[in-house]
Image (tube, helix red, strand yellow):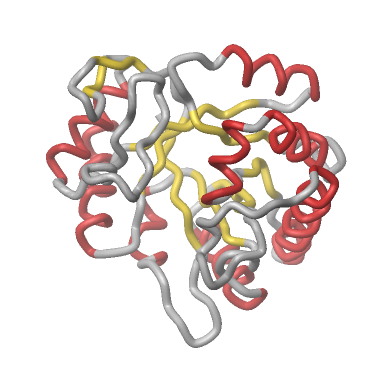
Length: 243
């Protein structure tokens, strides 16, 4: 089971996340591309840090929403979403190439990620953009209780799919993560996070927010490194999955 992390989310004079501390424990870095967080200098430094630790490079494009950290849906035409994804992926791809690196996948951020999972037009816009990028870029997307429609669309566009699960988020019965506005949507207890990570990695069942059992197919597990507690959790997950 691979571990991925949303990273490179500092901006200008503001520092977000503990990137240097979490990078040694992950396999895939989802690097912000400037629309919800990050800036060209942060993108450059994050790519350099990831390459130093042999971590795969992924673009983390979002709606143009710095103030809302990309967590607010925006009314955009599919053509606009297509263009904004190409723009962000292209910028990070060039920054990576300048340092001898290469992107391998794209994981949309925040509201764009959630909209993609619920609106086929948004998903098609993103898949179409991936089909026009340099190189073959995979799409990292949320695993649910039924992945067949998602798999079919990715196959239609010839895009590899990486199914992602979350160690620190609560799920509903359909396999969707519970919105952050709902109490209990985010796990903070390291023991709970570790149990959920191990269950997903081993193909076992996890408990939904309503106490029902859910089994998720996953290729990669999302972890976070925005505070000392989350970094400790990542370290524990890495140790548990390698022993």
